[in-house]
Length: 196
Image 1: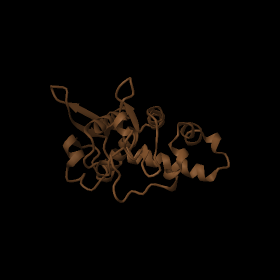
Image 2: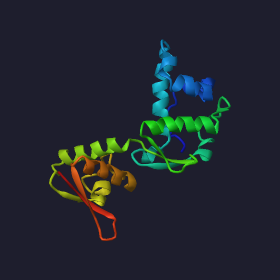
Image 3: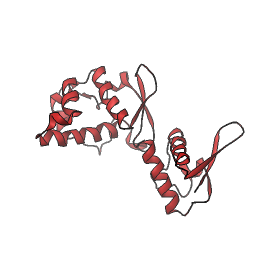
């Protein structure tokens, strides 16, 4: 989960209160606490972007990834060794709960020890996929999952290499919106999708 060499933390990352639960609860998430404090408002926006972006490796930023809360405690995301500050497990869960409320995190267990992190929400992926379908004149056609993940038309797009679970969930959203019909094999596995 290390950030890539091109990733630069904002100045707020070295501000010790950023690594306290009180700051997270009262300054990072509560807009009323930020009234008139432009630097905190800007910091809040930066933090949200940092947390979302950094939870996923740079190489797979368009895919879903798993995050273990205990392991995350030692990552640069929640532990700034330069200023010798880190968030507690409770504060990390507060941050991840906030990201869950935005659709970027899905808890995978009731104990909130692991979660799935999404660079984009499932609804955003559905919109990206459908935009790709329209831009490539593929309405009325049937595509396999492979074509959407790694086919010639997918190369160079945000969808290229998309996590299969994320893809299936996005296609389910499009089916619910009546923009697609998914097809399953006799074993119940999703084989393909027709776009409308």
